[in-house]
Image (cartoon, rainbow, N blue to C red):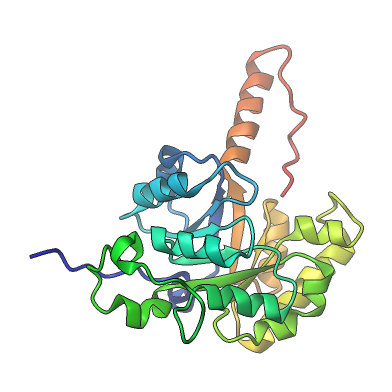
Length: 270
């Protein structure tokens, strides 16, 4: 008799159960070994990134397998809000999506529809072939697949800030996440994530999420920035990245032990 298995808890459920903000980190190297190291760190969640990192379907699958069993929730960010790509991610077993560059309620609704089978969405049916259903070893997967998936949409443009209340009202959106880097660029402040106007836009969205009863997170590598956003109501944070930690750590070693060590990256961007 085949083993019957259950899906993991979603990020939606982790946020609902938390009695404090959840701290996470980017996993950008594409390495299952690095992902596993990060999974055992004690952080609450990981974000495997495929928008700005060398991750394809095979490496995402390997990282999901590497972190399985660790007490951490894993989100995956696709490179684009695309129905076909999201279908492939879900079939791999991705349960928690962070969808980038969602600028309107219609785009948020499209992201949600990509995660739902008809008649509630447009996800293609292939559970017998897919890790998502553990090859039909998860009882009743088709009927309750939507319950096993969480959708977080990324607010990272002036258009998205203007539309944030409408985005928050989309059924099936479980959380929003603020991206200060792209937001700064869209506001004419490229590379100035700490600009007062950028901070103000982020805090506006945090207030809107709180008013809507929706969890909201933000990228904040600097501890003082993270504390400020926590005070403003953020319920989850990304506070570092595997590749950034390696870059800064190796630079610190070079600065300590060689005459020509570079410290040019000492101020981490995000």
